[in-house]
Length: 106
Image 1 (cartoon, rainbow, N blue to C red):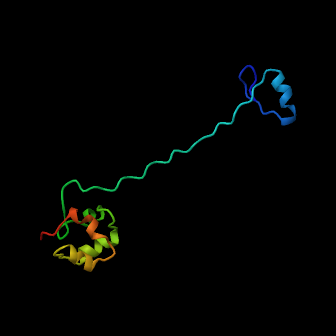
Image 2 (cartoon, helix red, strand yellow; image 1 turned 180 degrees about the vertical axis):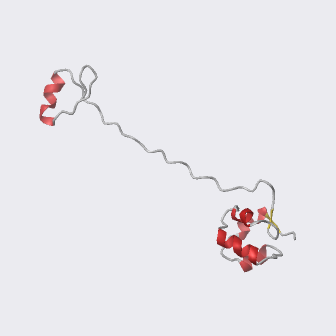
Image 3 (cartoon, rainbow, N blue to C red; image 1 turned 120 degrees about the horizontal axis):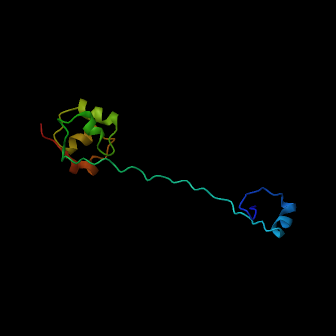
């Protein structure tokens, strides 16, 4: 409850009516809400295509869907001639969805 002078008090329910007659007001509980941050956007390769046969491990890991283990596999199984070669050697990745970001120059 809140007194006429603005001071807040906890009042037992049986005494509530008496305090209301004296000018006290009921204070509605403040509900605090949590702000949930939006998920981070997927990394975007801005410098053009990633040369699968020349790029660093970090450049591969920065591609969407590619974790460190798959990137190491790609590096260890070089050279790759085309997207079919990647699909055959590392089938756990959806290479077709990121094919437009890859080049196969040597």
